[in-house]
Image (cartoon, rainbow, N blue to C red):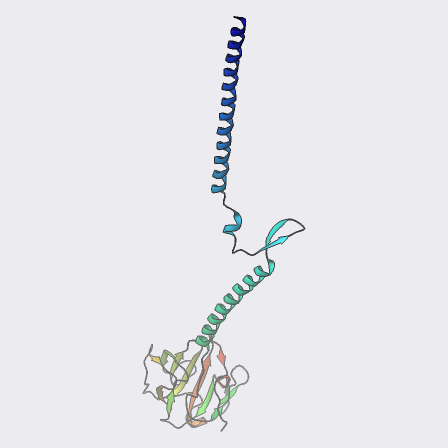
Length: 244
């Protein structure tokens, strides 16, 4: 009877111990599975940096242990950007220059009769009178054709302005300069706001000036160049004439 009781107790003890062993094993399996799942989840949410950055040049600095973008590559890229910018800027500058640069031709096929003296010296306009005369005079017979010295727009047409220079035409050019043609015949060939091209006829040499008339100086065209500030400029800086 005692032997059976002891055997029964041992049997019950083994049953309890087996239960705890099985429970421990199950917990270990569950913990391992959870750890593996968590690690896989982290790997999926944080892919290796190298895969996304394989096109980026990296220079390993062994002394500091820090990854740096290759300085030479940075300088190269920066220089290429500057070159492209400069190239684009140069192209724009050239376009502006070609627009603002205006070439002039002689408005009359003649020789230089009076050089530019305005603001420098006085010109004898009468027996006992000297005056400051604008522009230059180009020799040409009355009726000779006068043409536009450059492309532009007719800015003004008139007669007897402050210069007493008779009939005149003023043409405004794209670079801000203006050219003035005076002592013209009254038969003007253009109208205000007309667009004219270089060499197009605007009138004829006349005898309408009241100062330095044809009688005093000979048949001529008075020609002026005026800058954007309204100042007189020597026309011989823009055209070439032979002296009479």
